[in-house]
Length: 486
Ligand code: ADP
Image 1 (cartoon, rainbow, N blue to C red):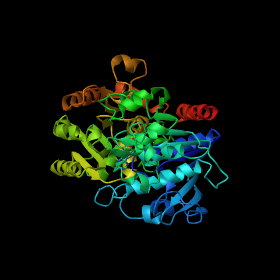
Image 2 (cartoon, helix red, strand yellow; image 1 turned 120 degrees about the vertical axis):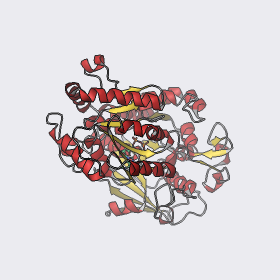
Image 3 (cartoon, helix red, strand yellow; image 1 turned 60 degrees about the horizontal axis):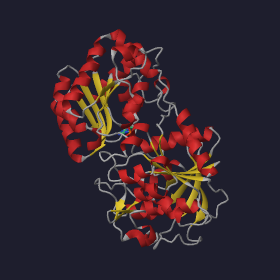
Image 4 (cartoon, protein in one colour; image 1 turned 120 degrees about the horizontal axis):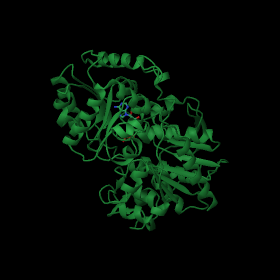
């Protein structure tokens, strides 16, 4: 079985969030199961630097035009990801080789040509999945991820001998909506620009195109699969998604258990495992030291690693931060995003030196150290398609406090005397998304934290849970098999 996995980011090469983690780990898991899977990735500068042995496969100047007007020089290269999965890199310097971020410029503003950048990306994926491809390797299935590859199923719909498509939604809030005037420039027929197609209230929606034209839709947790069919979390696409509910599956993300393994994590000050937890205390002290917090083994340390966005509920944490540290507790935050939130976080840390510490930016090593060194992880997301940090934190013996939404419901079992006794408890879940409920849940966690025996029991359950990709990768494989049969 041959699968082309189309993703705009893949860990450990290029990452802004969970999509990268999933793309890296899921493709590896599928390859280990015998699927001939290849990734398609844009040739950002970080990608070209990380993969020096790329070979030229196709030069688009010598290949029949892709139907995109004014196509800058572009080539297709082939290499291998660090885990061993082959990767096609779309090398188009004018579109992908620049400073700033992969979606945003250095001021945090969307690149003005994102439609062209990811339109071309989607168009090349479609070419590789159709009779138009000059390559010998032809996928049986094209697996698209989020809006950046959302146009692929639409292009394929109008092509000869198209492979069937799976469209995976990692976050419905990001849809790639652009002016309709771009339809011809992107080489799409006007025929697709209709409510039953790629049109979304007069604009062109990359994600809607994917959801409409893909043969199957998946999202990253069973609870989120239900939530996106409702008005509250459907972001205007709930009608289409409920209409397609027979072709919509929620498959829980796994985690890369090698990358996120406290017993062999090079980013940690000390390795530890559920059998020998002594290293966890050492990581706590290392984290306190690194972040300028008072070095104190006894005070509970609350950790956050998050995009700073309304979705993640950080504003609610800030609202109660002073109450949290008065409990007493310490708070450490790592993240970036919303400039106002960044400013508020830094101001608060400045005001409470030694008790609240923050680093604004993207720092892989610090994110691992927080998972290991904190006692309790906070993740009060307003909505959460799956979420990875609450799984990482459990694996690191750092029970999470989470809002009951999406994948957080599917991965965290609220701790009660009964669930602790049955060995199911794995964190603290609160129902209502507000400051009082979050505070109450943290209070419950801190109370249990004082009871060392119960806390240890909770940590043991968390650390011994299976978060591997095994069963989820099989579920994706089954979807591929069903599509090929059809
Ligand atoms: P989302 O994809 O919505 O941002 P997830 O929980 O699914 O949220 O995945 C986020 C991923 O990005 C995790 O691997 C997390 O550790 C990582 N991450 C987020 N912000 C940072 C940061 N500032 N520095 C390092 N890693 C981060």
